Amino acid sequence: EAKKQGRNRYAFFTPELRERAVRRLSLDNELRRAVEDNEFLLHYQPIVRPETGTMVGVEALVRWQRSDGRMISPGEFIPLAEETGLVVPIGEWVLNEALMQLGEWDRDHHGGLTMSVNFSMVQCRHGGLPAMVDRALNRSGIDSARLVAEVTESDVLVGQQQYQAVFDRLRERGVRVAMDDFGTGSSSLGQLKRLPVDILKLDRSFVRDITKSSQDEAITRAAITMADALGLNVIAEGVEEATQRDLLIDAGCRLMQGFYFSRPRPAEEIEGLLREKRNLPES
Ligand code: C2E
Ligand code: MG
Ligand code: MG
Ligand code: MG
Image 1 (cartoon, rainbow, N blue to C red):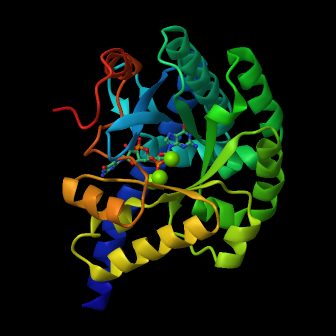
Image 2: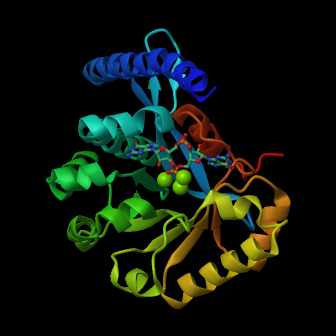
Image 3: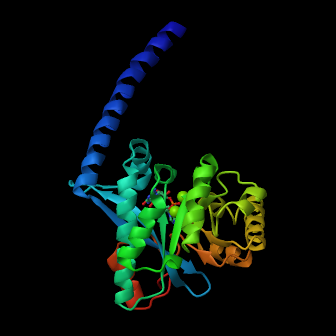
């Protein structure tokens, strides 16, 4: 019986594994081509002051628009791009595009937004990141204080020394640093005090159940209080409902992001919101 099962499993796994390897290899090749042909685009998700619905900044989120029209999300290709190192040229394109876009909005008199850009630890390890950021800031003419560099908490904890070296240098230039997905890793209070961080982005997994789980509510309130005490700003991620917004306001959270306010949108739609001075969520 065991033997039969074993054989079944063998028969079941082999083609699947082979298929997965083939798919990975072809995705790898496609991704390489996508970098050459520049098949990427950015969507922007508003970061909002929840009491008024004012957009104070946006986060740039990359998408892969394939020639067949299919849109691939970063969750699908960023891990592969990290493994292959392609995240370095992709990341450089993202930063340049995001800052150029911000410059365009400035020229259309929608000044003052901040721009948050995601960085992977692979980019930090590659070296040359501070110089790359300098070039992008110079080219776009954007004030460094308006750029927020986001790194996930788990990335920070894995590559602490490289992170420290690179992000100390970015902060010397006036760039602000956000710890993304905060709460999914396990930073200690001591680490938070020492690490170069300006902003905590409270992970969606806490926000999701905040109105249903008194534990998640307690953790969230404690995280906001702690961030306040350390002089850090907090952005709650993944706010999807008014009840979550209200509870987070009550907990002292001053900045939020999530589908409740707006999904990530193409640049033209952000422009429309700015032009018509519309608050979020739209009524
Ligand atoms: P992230 O930086 O934590 O970005 C937030 C993600 O949560 C985005 O997914 C966004 O669409 C999604 N989100 C925002 N609000 C809500 C909400 O209310 N509910 C739900 N369910 N989801 C919400 P997206 O665009 O698929 O990006 C996924 C991740 O890919 C990002 O997570 C980030 O880690 C990574 N990523 C995106 N763009 C880049 C990039 O240019 N470079 C690098 N290295 N990573 C990137
Ligand atoms: Mg992010
Ligand atoms: Mg996040
Ligand atoms: Mg996330």
